[in-house]
Image 1 (cartoon, rainbow, N blue to C red):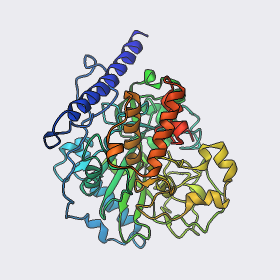
Image 2 (cartoon, rainbow, N blue to C red; image 1 turned 120 degrees about the horizontal axis):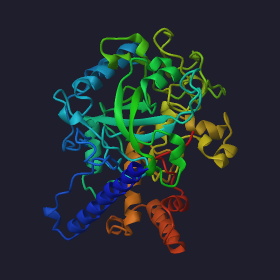
Image 3 (tube, one colour; image 1 turned 30 degrees about the vertical axis):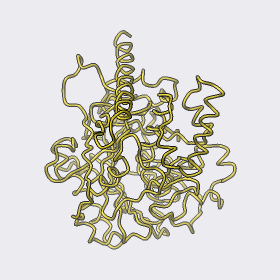
Length: 475
């Protein structure tokens, strides 16, 4: 009990100090001549154990984003992802792994190529922890990962990485650390590569392999996380953070490719320790590749508790690994579209990421809101809006701005906005830059809510502004 109390107050101190530091920096910069301003680095993480309890390596945010667009493109772009999907995925994986696996993905030390992290992931109840920079993602339902999985308390934690071409866009958007660009549609450049490593919060290898046999011979990291995801719905989930082992289960990739019909190629890998490959990271086997939503297919099928992988061969924009000896049984997405094991079986890689926008007016799927689902039942034209072929750089809602399929990019501004509300002020930039009408409406909603109740929680302010919190959404 004493240790739990110590960690709780430590979390508050770390979290509070980062806020006070940021507020102090902002005040200092406001009084400094513009040509002398030098933005302070973005915070590395929001939650970590006491330094008296741990003095090992900690997460460092890679944030020296390039000022000019890099000229070298990844060599795998010459591969036809439709005709040779497996080679394409393997080469993308090699590109992401090179120089990273041997340094435990502490990418600031990569000598092969530059990789970057998204800023402003430290904030909020799902914010970054300090061992590896993991954020709380989504709960995992019973039987979602395997027929033997009876546990319903575990969830996914993850960290995302961006190559130098993607890092250029992040750096341009966040060039002024207190005035991020959000009044125009964002678009990553050709050759941008995004990848994410996802872990599940099983406490030890015995439990993990009993629940999900393919997690045998696993890759384990330490994390300062909420391992029981039922606690994430509590008022103060941070008090349930503790040092816990987490095990690798999934890898996602996104490639900005102008040869793709709508600008992006999505790929997925699932961990299968039974492959017992010399390099454990290579036990991440391909699930498949996706470049089109197949909006003509509205058949309502899902495989939420998979005993085998059901492949929909009628899909034209998704290819799934047919080798059942390599790929463990997995649920995929709605009617066989591509999705990973910890993702929603009624969604797809494409449909989730297409909703990334600012302000975040859309939810990832109608399933996350009963009123939205009632108005857009499964398979209806309204439901199929989430399975349209939205092009890169186009917003899901006409009154928003596109974050170009990057939910972390959308979340970075949302977290920044939350910090501004909590610190109790509005930046003068919103007046000097003459923001578009929808931002003015958002500010009006926030101001009205503040008048109603000065003690209003952020979730109440979010509701008043019609903005969907995307840090933690129950499936």
